[in-house]
Length: 340
Image 1 (cartoon, helix red, strand yellow):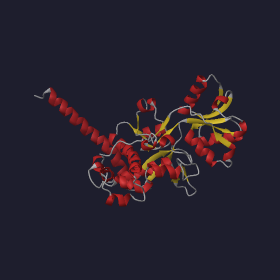
Image 2 (cartoon, one colour):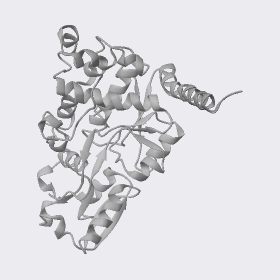
Image 3 (spheres, one colour):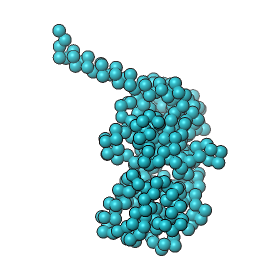
Image 4 (cartoon, helix red, strand yellow):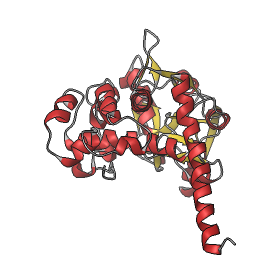
């Protein structure tokens, strides 16, 4: 006779077994395929866009390459799939991509209703407004009655309506499908402002032929925590994406860089550095990865600070300041749980 306690234990073991089978499926699928399918934007310079040679570059692209380095040991083994705001979630749900890394905001409904797991925040953002200086506007509060380009099916569309309603103002929305269309409309004078994530506005402004003719207004009207996303139900895959991002953050905090990672692996006596780089412990094994998975990640794209500075920060034409995206030790919000 099976007791209630034994039945409960058997149920837990069965759940673990079934979960393990499902979990192993995604990682095994990627290893068998030999490439990571990563959903990115249709083109936001600094975040995800092909360069003159057709090679994808950018901050979000770097996270895709980091995950490929962690799972396959090959940062270039990524198939980039350009996705619009409208088709990004269906592409993830259908298995067209293994993960999203494309300036996607973590919200309650997306997490719960769409069955998506956001595996951390790689960029703390907020919605703003890009306008032509000749418009003579210095504040979003002066946009009453303005025509505003906004992408349909986004949090930006909802935030915009909330902001104007709260401030007892009116606006005329100009629905657009892509950032490129919005910029075209703004340059043509078909809309007075373009409203979306402030990071993207700064990136688009920097890429204009005459960036000094345009400015991003000072108001931030929303919270936009942007991060990589995977489907519910594959815990190991989610863990891998989450801890790849955490490895980038921890590496910056510990002073591990793309230039010194190999030396640090050989000489560091810091226990967390040694665990991170696979010199001791079995952290890689726990996730189904090789011991040096994080070392491969850092060697490929650098730590979080290097990736930020080289794509959208101080070493790039965009020049976005770290702000909220500084480490917690430097007054920002970026913070990784410990590697132990």
